[in-house]
Amino acid sequence: MSERRPAPTVGQVVLGKRLQELREASGLGREEAARALRVTAATVRRMETAEVALKIPYVQVLLETYGVPEDEAEAFVSLAEEANQPGWWQRYHDVLPDWFSLYVSLEGAARIVRSYEPHFVPGLLQTEEYARAVLQAGTIGQTGPETIERHVSLRMERQRLLERQDPPHLWVIMDETVLLRPVSGGEVMREQLDKLLEFAERDRVTLQIAEFASGPHPGTYAPFTLFRFAEPELPDMVYTEYLSGALYLDSRKEVAAHLEVLDHMSTAAASAERSKKILRERREDC
Amino acid sequence: MSGSESAPARVDTSRPHPARVYDWWLGGKDNYPVDEELARKILAVDGTVLRGARANRRFMHRAVRTAAEAGTRQFLDIGTGIPTEPNLHQVAQGVAPESRVVYADNDPIVLRHAEALLHGSAQGSTEYVHADVRDADALLARARESLDFDRPIALSLVALTHYLSDDPDGDDVYGLLEKYVAALAPGSHLILSQVTPDLSPQAIEHAANHFRRSGTPFFPRSLAEFSRFFDGLELLGPGVIPVYGWRPEPADVAAQAEGIVPVYAGVARKP
Image 1 (tube, each protein chain N blue to C red):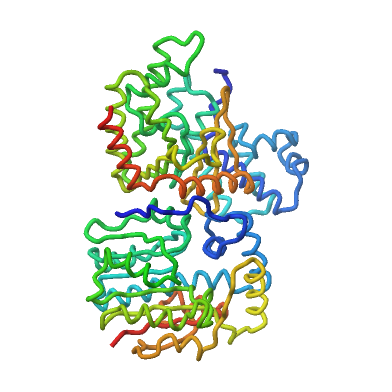
Image 2: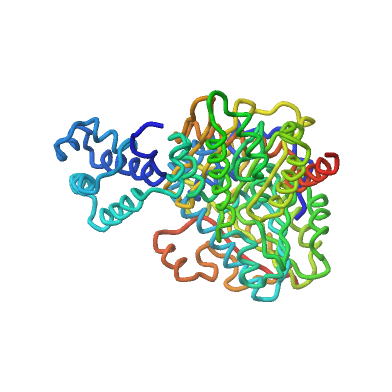
């Protein structure tokens, strides 16, 4: 991992976007904004894209330059101060790739987390042993057991989210493959199925199985997650992974495409009630 | 919680759907670009639609609270739409946690959203039925699985009847409502709202054309036509009235000051 500053938190990403909107609303270009700060236009761009932390004195000058009313400017500054606080996950910076750090932040800030999982039980619902087996299989090269253990404990810590007073809704569409793919021994799978059944009973957890019998579906590319926030002005964000990194999408067009695929898959997949039955049957068979 | 099993395999999302157009007007994010496009087109010809959508939601809250406070403990909501807080069961169970609520919608996507995100009180029940309002027999049969039709039910069709035609060989909206009301026990309530051309005929004509061109038939109704839905029932005060005027709360009075919304609303009791 590089020595750069930690990956941005969701707050920084959102505030950066808001700063850009305020600039555009004032009719100023990046060059003009940069002049007010005596920096280059590239620095303003990096602030807006959350590549650098928001320096409070800079933010104050920009808000004034954009003619933002005082009370709104004050609220913005206090949010920026808050967003600059590192999250609990920064303790795992040794194993946490930058691109995944934002995921943990989004997950913690979201009101609804909708995901499609073609291969494995979603991280938030994995047992420790299942997580260990998946992480061991997923790491190639010179990853020592200590690193794997760090990853396992990060994943377990993420799960505290669901124990929060007001947890987000977790709505997962899991491919039937997940139930059939043996991960480590039978005992690991039995425990994992028990855990899925336990969480499927919760009001804030919806688990739907995409059965083989329902045929091909439009989500066959890669796992992805859509985050919905409580604040109506925040756009949905989509996270999707590939072998060596991840993409965060927030344009209306791309988010809508993922939303539409999730909606179609949710109608084609087994209902939450039927999915529990499938899980119970699978548990009895293994 | 009972799920709906037989959702069709594929829903057509290449065309706008009224529930998702409505969601866009309400500021929701569960809509696609085709829905947003139609929502914006209609907004351009009828600037009241955003307020109108909110006014319908607020009316539903007040009407459901009225029925609940009158002792109703069973609710059947047809054409539920995309979940929007607060939802009907939250209002009903807020008055009486033991309230039983059945949501019915013909759109499988709406239904999956409701199943995933709407969870009622532990004391009451909240169910979701995949059924079309036009198929009263099937819808009522499913609703009977969780509601007792020998006791009063508040039946709500909020901003729904303007998608249904009068045509006796088509939707036969009057015959349809008679059928639903006939199934209810005395003391039940009928909660309705729908778009009218009475107040701003040109804007509504343009809006209706946009709906029709997108494949959604649209039937605005006059005061007399809308009032006919309540024939044989006892209208609660103040009767049939533009939606913000129905037993307004302070926020509704404030909203009324922004201008009238071309929607009628009414609540009646079955004698």
